Image 1 (cartoon, one colour):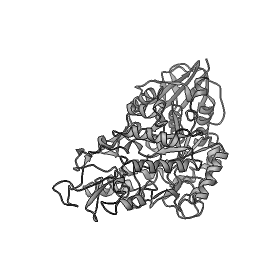
Image 2: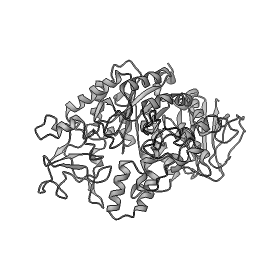
Image 3: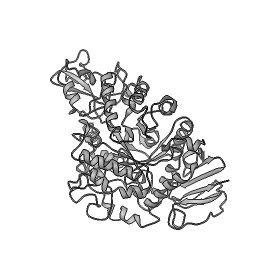
Image 4: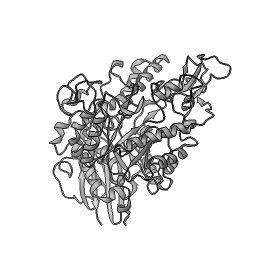
Amino acid sequence: MSQEQDAPWWRSAVVYQVYPRSFADSDGDGIGDLPGILSRLDHLERLGVDVVWLSPIYASPQADNGYDISDYRSIDPTFGTMADFEELVAALHARGIKLVMDLVVNHTSDEHPWFVESRSGPDSPKRDWYWWRPPREGFAPGEPGAEPTNWRSLFSGPTWQLDEATGEYYLHLFDTKQPDLNWENPEVRHAIYAMMRWWLDRGVDGFRMDVINMISKDPALPDGVPGDDGLGDGFPHFICGPRVHEFLQEMHREVFEGRDRDLLTVGEMPGVTWEEAVLFTDPARQELDMVFQFEHVRLDHGPGGKFDPQPLDLPALKASLDRWQQRLGEVGWNSLYWCNHDQPRVVSRFGDEDRYWRESATAWATVLQLHRGTPYVYQGEELGMTNAALATPEDLRDVESLNHLRHAVEAGMEQQDVLAGIRAMGRDNARTPVQWDASEHAGFTTGEPWIAVNPNHGWLNAAVQYDDPSSVFHHYRALIELRHREPVVAHGDFTMLLPDHERVYAYERRLGGTRLLVVVNLSGEPVAADVAPSGELVLGNLTGQPGSGAGTPADGSTAPLPLQPWEARVYLDRG
């Protein structure tokens, strides 16, 4: 059997992320739901994706938009019913599309029955299901500095919350309403595995696992190196902890081994290194199929973190992605993404959302989608949706942004300066409703949307793009078709070209005698790229090029290759 025939199905697949709250609303309450998703499946089939990753739809108080789960085996009424879910699974499968659920098991909601029982007292049989600790020695409960460790929460402030009734603290790496589960307790692990098997028995095709590399903490819970705010960096003590590989191998045995269906497992892993990622994704170790790493989307973070954005250094981006391409190319596997529910829109972040909106959106798409790995498309990305219009604190909905705003202003920063960072990098940018048409609320809802629709939906929407062969939507379709059609995209090796060029991103993929050359100008100025194309121009993003309206033959260009602002070219040479 050939390498391509023997490869896992997901190497040639494309995954589409649906954030249900903002995808499509069927009942007019302003919040997206499962029947809404069902009503838009023609869009996904037309796009050509193979898998839908569904962000959390479980019962939840919605403190973090569903990433705070109060019942793992129930559908939140906001999104519909279990019957709606079963109908969606069946409809997707009928179209040949798999469904991957979001798995959030580093933490639960503080309203989950497990935590309610755990909180009931030190003698509770579930006390050890979460991380409870007394105040620091020499401190009274609630006294400043009494927290058991000095760790800083990923959502601002300390990671420990005092429970007044017992005088002890519980650990929450995220919001106070998201207490961390104690994976050291085997009862916790096996309750989670049983829940996962329950969903697989209902037709789910795998899981995207939220911050899964945080499930193993150093049991000593040592202090971290303190920063200017007096809080410490706990990352070395809860990222890829001492038992994380053991836990994931156990999960594989207990949940996935012996299943007769093709499943997909992907782990979201903040702070993961490529060395660790190789271990997580090595098939022989039986842990995960692929991981989400964050190195490339942190390159534009300044000294103040994500809300201190800096201009992107393109050679640094190339060096980062090239390193991951090479290191995970033969043993493990890459997940490819620019956007998701936690990242701002790529066309606003790295592109030109004004003069060269379409060209820059399709340029960045071309760069990413033809790398070696499994590409992920976040809802609206295939339309070139831009960042939101976040002008005031009242426009914000995201708990991370709201917490950051409060803490930063309390620390003496000017509100307008804090808002500028949130405007550029806040998660609400990704969470505005999908822009289906030019109607009042973009075809998302007949009611008042839970977060404002982007004002540019009058011209930037799916309805306009469906009939425009040069649209962003059709360029994504062409990229997905190319991956499905040409084995070199899914299975070829990867060589970065022009690594130090500050405006051009170029690489080649090779499989046997086939060569795929990708050359993209990521700037608003014309440029000449020192590459030598050969074969056929199979895809471009300027009008008149293949994939952008009307096909043209290869132009026979030789190095240097002239490129217009934000121009992308893809050449295929079958040798």
